[in-house]
Structures are given as C-alpha cells and as structure tokens.
Length: 229
Length: 135
Picture 1 (cartoon, rainbow over the protein chains, first blue to last red):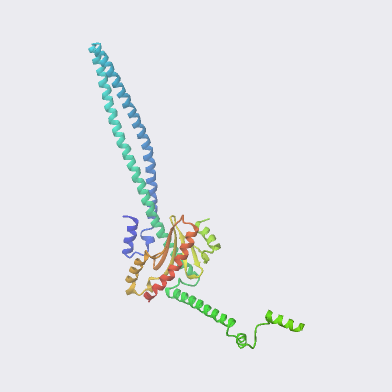
Picture 2: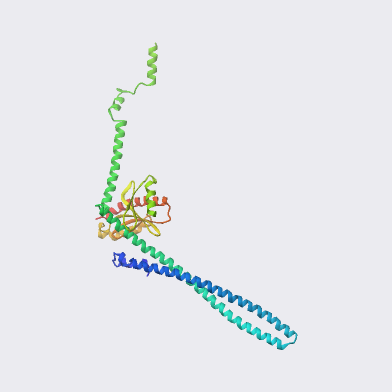
C-alpha cells in the first residue's frame, strides 16, 4: 500500500496521532533502508552488467572468428576436391564440423548472455523506479511530519506567549477594527481638509470680503503710482 | 545558513509591492518562521521548508469553531473553491482549517514574496467567507 493510501486509511479510521501510527521513525527507517538497498542493488547490477557485456563481446568475437575459419576451411576443402584429394577434403570437412560445433556453442552463449543483459537492464530500471517512488513517498511522510511538528510548535509558541492562535472571530474582529480605523482615519482626514480649506473663520471672512488676501501686485503698483503724483 | 535563515534576512529588508514582512523565527525541532505581512496582518503566515517544498500556512480557525451541522457544506465549498483560489489551497492540519501555498525549494525570492502576499490576501477573503459558518 502506498504511503498516501496508508495516511488516507489512518485518517478515515479517525487516527489523529499520525506521528505514532504511520509516520513513525521506524517506518521512515525501513523506507530509507529500502532506498539504500535498491541503490546498492543497482550498483551490483551495473557491475554484473559490465561483466556480462564483456563476456558477450568475447563470445561474439569467437563466433566471428569461427565463421571466418569455417569459410577458409570450406575454401581448402574445395581446393582439395579440385585436386581430387577426397581424403584431404574429408579431413578438412571434419575440421569444419568441429568449428560448426564450437560456433553453435558460442551462439548459445551469446544468446544466453543477451538474455542476461536484458534482465539486468530491466532490474536496474525497476530499482530506479522503486527509488523514485520511495523518495516521493518518503517526502510525503516527511512533509506530513514537518507540518505536524510545525503546527505543534506554533500552538506551543503562542501558548508560551500567553495567547492562543486567534480564533476566526478574533481575526475577523481584528480585520474589521483595522478597516474601521482606516475608515475613521479617512473621515478624519477629510474633516481636517475641510477645516483647512473651507469652513473655518478665515475663509468665512474672506468669503464675506472682510478679510481679503494680502495686497496683490496690482494694488501695490497702484499705491506706488498714487504716491508719485 | 539554512534556507529559512536566508529567507528571514531577505524578507526583513524587502519592500514588495508596498508590503513589508515582519519575521519571527519559532523555536523548536522543526524550523518555522512566522511572517506577518504589513497591511494584511490579522493572520500570521507560518513558513516551513522541507526537502522538496517551501510550505506557507495560515491557520484560519479550529474545526470546533464551525457549526457542526454545516461542516460538510463548508468542506465541499472549500474543495470547490480550491482551484480558483490563486496560488493557495484549503486544507486541514490537525484540528485547524488552513490556507496554504506550496512551492518548490528552488523558487525565487520574488516568487516567495508573491506567494506570501497572495496567501495573506486569500486568508482574509477566506475568513470573511467563513464567517457565516462560525458558531
């Protein structure tokens, strides 16, 4: 059963303490050991693979050598027949028969080794997939564990600081208070703006023409001109 | 220096899209960093980094805070909302409803900032949506 399935089953069974139930350190150790074993077996398979492939190449070389020998000796036999030396031809043919026997043996060896190469390659592939699966599952276990630990620490930490994790109501109230504060600030700002800009005594006086702006350039110029006259 | 320690230093100095990050490491066996995003500070985010993921979690509320008879409805609604919610998902950890974001450990610092701000915003929205289900 996959780890995710185990966790799923445990949750459905109402298990809360997953730390003890599934993701116990023993379980993790077994997983880690399986990963190490799989890695070792890949290493072993690779060593075997090189050996088997070397032996296969050797056998194949023998086969081609035998094929060559057979061809050469067929030539000899043919020449002996040309010289009507039946006895010699027969002797050569006997030699060819030996070569062919040896070739059959070597062919069988090549076939067997080819099978072994395929097997080892399949084994390596399988082990690599197992490692990838296990590492992914291990990461699920570790993450579950980390999140649980993190949560426990967070809860402990706020408890140590004489508070609890906010309830949703408290958080909502805080958000609302924050929003109200913002709104109040906004309104206060507007009020202040108004006070500075319009509704104070100065602006009322100005509006009434009682207290105007300080003298404009035109007024000053007019005054100077009046002084000159 | 651990990845969390690096993150703490970087977050302390950055101003990302007008937000700053207030970081507080939480002591314990598991490295956890509490991050409070400015302007979105009602619920802190807790960051944990595992072998494969950066996990950012916000605890919304305890399951016991939800009206029992409406819990199934809430769970279904959360599942339905999950895909649409940007960068975050709903989940239950121990007794808590949480909103969380998971990132690859190879994520950039900018991605992390974006995640944190989005998560904080999502948590606000989620909490407001949750209000009607509260006891």
